[in-house]
Image (cartoon, rainbow, N blue to C red; front, side, top):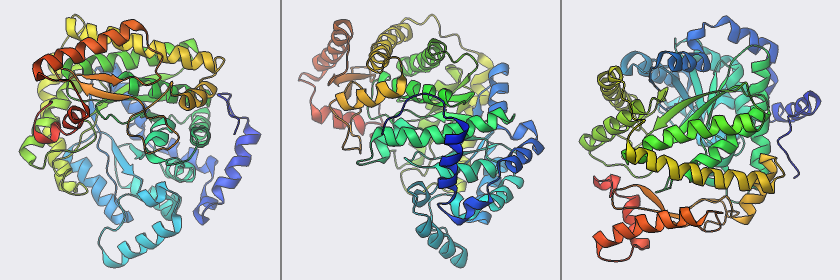
Length: 480
């Protein structure tokens, strides 16, 4: 499949839409003119893009969960509980896994079982089965903006229905979907599907409806931040190429305060820089942070500490939106009660910290982390653009095949998987193996020295056993 970062023509997009909307019966109910009119009938306070821009202007941090349930009544109950009891600022509708894999018939069967028994069956909201009107029924019940959540290689029909149903944003992206949610689907196919989604968002923007696109890049697995920043910048440029105007930058925090704070700054600065370098001068970016993926502690007491810690980093870093895991994350699908407890905790911590307005610009350790991150990001981005002849999509496809763009522990069999991260003596993520990443000698020496400092403390060489220990450290109650 030959693809590029050129904006799709209206004719090409409409031809693609005809095919997508025919995938399930509810696609016939999508009418863009009606959808735009519906969005314009809603107050600005129910638009995620406008609300986050206001937060940026006022220097505030908003709270946003990632939850979803299957039936209309269950999902309404969940969102109303998060709005009224948890006190969040933005709501989400997590897409169930069957819908994310385009198994609409199975999702339909699961929904019928949930409706018949009154018990949840699916692990999210099956947009495609519900259709536009039932999705609007949920949106009409709440007062806050809501976003779709859930990476997947093909969410085109889900977005047609979710956006027409009143959602004003989405969190996911082609790179995180390729790295973590495919087995043998080529990266160009996933990018193509997201170009469709981004072109759809761009169409809403052209009609005066702001849509917030939250890029995700790559999930951390003791990952040096440049491994996550570069895939996000790629997603940003792909989205801008199709007319997306409002982008949320996702910072996957890992617990080392200086590195996490530097990460928030570098992602924002470099995303804005490469947008301008590639000719996109009218894209607004806002920042988001969330606690890491992976195993969580079982004890709620320990999770409360993690929620507070990662909320602190988000507020100190000045992000506009802060997400969080929940106190029952390690036990089962989070309940609305557990989620409310978690976000009330985050709210208390946020309220305590936010008025203090920390200035972190002069901190020497943050500046050191920032400097090395910037070098790494520029090395990767310049090489990807070079091999793509200035086209980020063409460069990304080539870079994945060559291992210039890589990820550890990817589910995809089409990834080199040669890079690995490990923590240094303070718990910051460093490159244990750089694979084929085109890094300079300065960068290589920096990471080697940081790892050697830990080896002196350990009294032995860092090994794969060390990496596994680092990956499970937080669940065991420590950063190391």
